[in-house]
Image 1 (cartoon, rainbow, N blue to C red):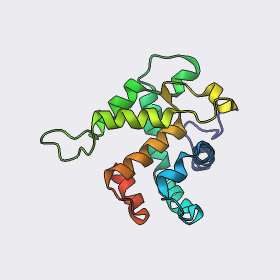
Image 2: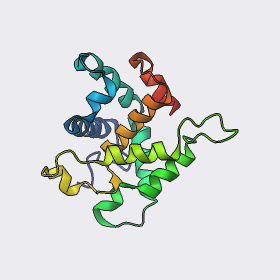
Image 3: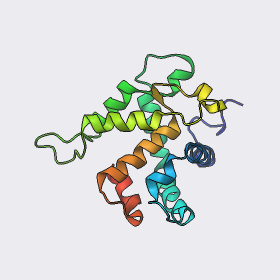
Image 4: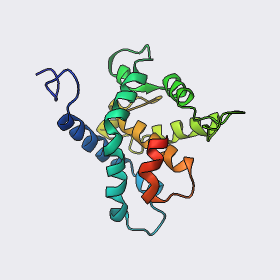
Length: 170
């Protein structure tokens, strides 16, 4: 067996399983709840909205992540993480940075770097995940959190009904 999908490309079943795994890792970090819901709100009421928004675009996001991981010259496990230079390249390619005459940009290089660092922090250094999580690179579940943070940043305040639309804009 070469891969979970038993196919040249990832099939929908393998992608659904990967999303579930990434979602569980995002939840285990504890930052997602604070990002999506203000204090006191019911997390479960919004859980499905955010996950559905990710599910709709997950195949594209996973391919984009893999593509930008290939920019690295790292070998071994680090080759499957998005290094800082690849992250900056993605932000440039997607026109996230506001520049003169560029209506698409909506943030600064400094804010993007702050998001990279915030998402890359490992909350439980003793956990098994911390051993395989590169210190200066994004794993796929961290990349998804970056996308969610950018969707929130794109249009504040957050209206969860519009989150799916915002993710497509990002």
